[in-house]
Length: 74
Image 1 (tube, helix red, strand yellow):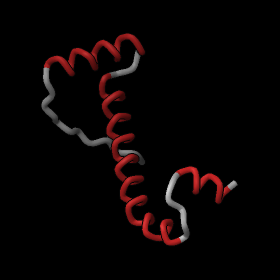
Image 2 (image 1 turned 45 degrees about the horizontal axis):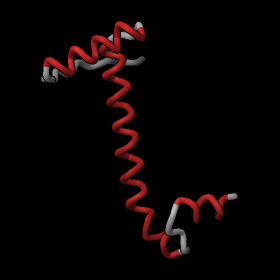
Image 3 (image 1 turned 120 degrees about the vertical axis):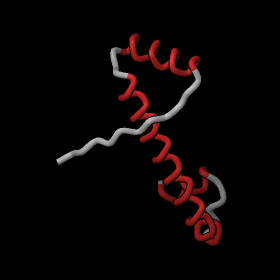
């Protein structure tokens, strides 16, 4: 079963207006927009954390740039 929790945040009026405008234009509830934004933020933070932990191992293998990684896996 999937449970939802409620989170109360404070945002500036301008940001709220922008969210409501996007919500109206895209026919998506504001809560869905905010939920997806938080989900993406969390994913980016997880990626950054993983990258930070693995960077020393990659550098030891001579993988210093994204291009190095792409060449290695191609």
